[in-house]
Length: 84
Image (tube, rainbow, N blue to C red; front, top):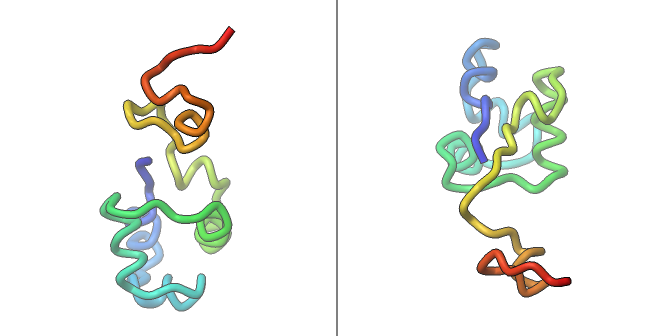
C-alpha cells in the first residue's frame, strides 16, 4: 500500500516523532509506515488521516496488488483460483 504520510507530515512541518506522539506510536513505527515496510492497522490509518484532516483513502492509496490478501489465502484463493 502506498501512502502520502511523509508528504502530508512535512507539509505541516511535523517530525515523525511528533506525529507518532499524536497517534500513540513510536517514531520508528511512523518511519516504517512512510517507507512501506509496515502497513498500519485500520485504526492507526484512521487516526493518522484525522491528524491531517484528510479522508483515509486520500492518505493511504489502496491499489491492486500482486500480493494476495489474508482473506484470499484463507478462502483458498492464494493463487487466484476462483470457486464456483
